[in-house]
Amino acid sequence: MFCIHCGRQIDDDALFCPECGMRTDVEHDGKEAAPGVNQAAADLPRADSAAGDAPQAPVDETPAEPEGAPAWEQAAAEGEAAPGAAYDPAPGADSFAPVLQAAAAPKKKKKKFILLAVILAVVLATAGTVTWLVLDMQAKEQARIAAHEKYLEDAQSFCSLLLDTAVDLEDIGHEIYDRWYDYVFKRRYSSPDAAIDAAQLAKSSEMTSAERGQLILKQLYEDLMTVPDENNETQQALQLQIKRTYTAFMDFYDFIMSPTGSYSTFKDTYNEKDGETADRYKELKDMLDKAE
Image 1: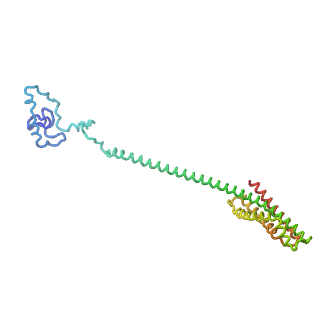
Image 2 (image 1 turned 30 degrees about the vertical axis):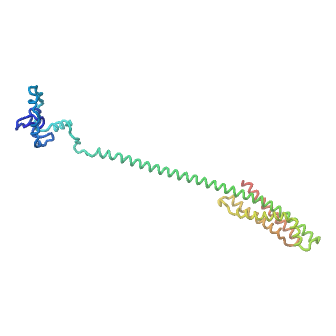
């Protein structure tokens, strides 16, 4: 037969090839030689016949592997890895540990990234909420200050217009007083109404101005009765004083526009209502000056 390793013709009962020293009854992996291998080896050209008288190649005199344990087992026993041997982990070791560790690393990184993203989102949301609250508080405070300044401005306008209208009423009242005096003591008019009509005619410009001023004052008064900030003590105090001043002024206005009673009664009532209106106005003006 022929050696399945080097193709040398050897004895049929030889266990080792005298040429290459390899076992002849098994292949490298320990399996029996496949049928036809000896025949394929036989078909190979003979080295001695092909070369003729050429010198023969030196024979590998490496001692044949003793029968028993294969070389790879002996190498493993000595702590050396056999050539071409596959990775064989230590007994009891988890052969999948490196794979699991390699697969777990990206997952840990992914979880860490998600956690950081969640923390960042919470921080940004908190910062945004705090910023919005601060801006909202600032906007409300600015609106409150603007509303208070507007209230003071309207109150000042109310005071100025009330003073001008009250002066017009005083002029009308004096004119009526003079005409009524002429009617009562000098009999220049046929009746008190005629005397009043004459006085109003003589002071028609002041009458028109007083009527126009009263209409504007009424609108301002209605606006000032709505306090923008109910917790603002200054606005509440001003509102009360505006109400007292406007009430006193309207009593004076109604009395001048339609006076009644005797001459002495008219004179006394005129002085009383005129003085009360002037006092309320002064108190209101002082409050506004302090609030500015």
